[in-house]
Image (cartoon, one colour):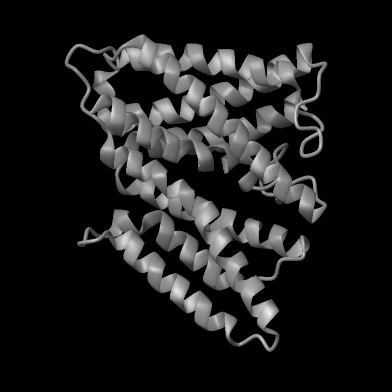
Length: 276
């Protein structure tokens, strides 16, 4: 297991660091690829779970939801307007089903899958909304965009890594066994402790109060764990272990971004409210 995780890290981390350093359109491009692949995996899982959809339309709608505001700025929000049009198109497509119940099912599933994966669009939104970093802060050299994206990425990774390490070493009591039998209370607590420390240090290095970072870490822990369990629920309903076979040791891409789907919007809201 550890060897597979190491191969997974070697597969993911180098390109992610390069994109993070380049910033700007490269971040948007990476998110676009992740959303397209992740959405395809989601619709496969939904289909396996007995929930038909319009997968091609769903992938396009997921991209629109995630990146509409990153492509153009218009009154009312480009993302919201384009997403609304996509939902209208999905509703029209649902009318082609002979059984109205099938049509409603396909309509709801398509919109759900697109909105779910489209949450990854809050990653580039964090870069756009990143608050300024005070002069003299240790991480000021990175600039606001890179620095706050690093906070998000390392915080989620800290929780996932801490939960895995503590759960493997000390795990005894099951946590949400009906959804993910491998999860333990000890693992969740370990992940929480790890991300609180990491987020506090990172936010302090950005010239902000460490306790605000510690609180952010706690919020990330809740959001990341919920995101992980939500994807586990989807896989359990589909009767599969992984969302795909793209990444050694971690299955599909969705297995790697599930925590970010719920953590990214929470971090954006917290950063905008607390640090602006």
